[in-house]
Amino acid sequence: MIENLNLNGGFFKLSTPYRWYGWLGYVLFGIMALVGMLMTLTNLDNNDDILVGLSISAIGLFGLAVITPSSHQKDLHNLRQQAIDPEVLEAKAKESGLSIDNWFLKQTTYVPTNDPSDWVLPAPGPAVWDKLDIYKQDGDGTPIAEHPVKVGTPVPATFTLFGIFGILASLFTVIAVGVGLTEVVDSSTRLIIIAVLGGIGLILLILGWFKSKMLTQMLDLQTSVVRSVPLGPNELVGQVRPSHEGVLRVVVDGNQNMYMENMVGFRWTYEQEQKRTVQTKEGSRTETRWVTIREDSGGCPFILHDGTGGIRVNGENFKRSDYGDFIKRWDSAFAKSLGKQFAAQLFAGLVGGWRVTDHRWTLYGLKLGNPVYLVGQVKSKSNAMIAEEGLDGTLQNSIVEVFGDEDAPGAKATLKRGTELTNIGRSRSTVEMILPAMILFLGAISLLVLA
Image (cartoon, rainbow, N blue to C red; front, side):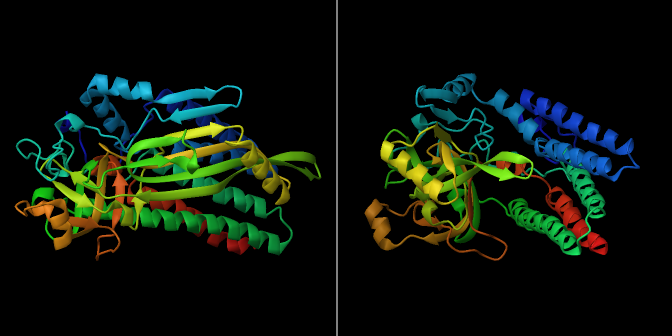
């Protein structure tokens, strides 16, 4: 099946939603964009209507861009549905979704039904893992089905509908701000508006630049196989398996009812939804914000196994870790105890008249069996560690380990949940990550003539 998939996106690919809510968003945001354009074109003699029309169109186009999948995302989703055992997909579906833990306290648990970082092709299950020799190859030593040496490296299309919608949204935003500036008398206010637009564009441009550099690294680096991995910087792809130290049972925010077993890396956040009522010239309005109160992260060593063998990874010391989408979320209208609820309300009220209306705990992480992609430094193990593990040194991959606390030229240390196929498969091209933001930034600079 993977052989029939064209992993080279080319210059342009018509990438459309593949889920019902994606198409619903396309309809709603598309109507908004068209209504805004119609309002603009039919009121060219009225600056206020032009400004409103351009703003509505920009919002609609931005929404269309956000919900447009990347060039390979739809293909990978369809391939996953065909390649993975239906029983496995059904079992995961039963574990996913929203469950109500306590109706009276409005406590719910949500496990995402769609995980873009999960395996696309079948991966070895725990039943076939060698529990005694964790560094030994699987079967005949063939790399796992989703290894880059077997499936190749996907290349995002230079342009998709995301790029078109994003460019149009940026242009409409710049024009709308330009029209709005003609109505502003105070020059300092004009400069502030231009600075805000330029700042947003610059931030997005910097973020896009760093993401594009990471994409370039993933495209350029050749993936090593564990069995013959050399010392030095390497790109590796494989499956998470337990090291001799074991795994973690992560308890979120100290609450024993919120936990996850078999973790090797994690990050959780505790957030509060806060609201307050403020008085304005037009009357009162309600402001809402989410505030991060506490967070924690950690990890432990694990084995990356790619079918040809396993290698020890010190996942807890990587400079950059990206666990993808969250794996579980707990919501509650109240804190987990009356004391914490009272303290939360008191503190929020003292620092601005806010009141706490919701609590949310979100867990991200890397579990046993998950796919993992990394770029790190492969170094020899110490003699003490080799002796501690009782290794005889006959397997080269058993006497080396991976660290992620230092970069090499052209190889930034990073650890990601997912394989190279899934990480690049849902990525935008460098052009799409940079061009819309550049238009915003350069457009803001050009508006200085109106200041």
